[in-house]
Length: 200
View (tube, one colour):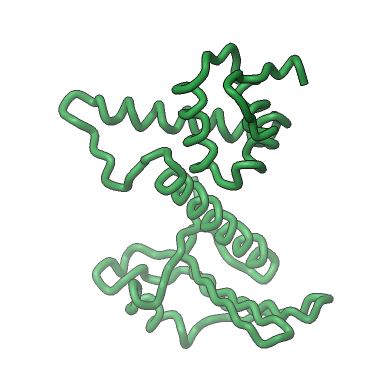
């Protein structure tokens, strides 16, 4: 398996010091005026302590017409050239976006998945973690394909609020189906009886 891993100057000083003088440069300006600049090098020692371990380095700078500059850098085992630096950049940015949004959701949207989630003495915590990831996967499937779930989430604004309302429904009502739950939250229920999705 290949990798594209973010690398920051503060964390990899020796790498950045070594690579600066030898970077190749490729740039182009998009139709909207955004300047895309790529600097790259192959077969670079990852650090001074492990000079025999070599990686390929890519630095990407995006400058908008308003002068806003965004910079990213990565190491990878994929050989870099002018032909593939754009694709590698997209992969690096997509990975960061996926990881950041998924970890943020698992930690802050009431899945309670913490970075220090231990494994326990007999793997109970690992089972809890797997169940949590399974629930998250099912929620992702519903978010992509279930219009009732999508409407309920839209009404509640955030998943954190959606889960709180779901728990409230189970406390106050007898629930016949998940379809009834999403329907009720999607229409902002009022009254003491949970409406049926079939009645809508």
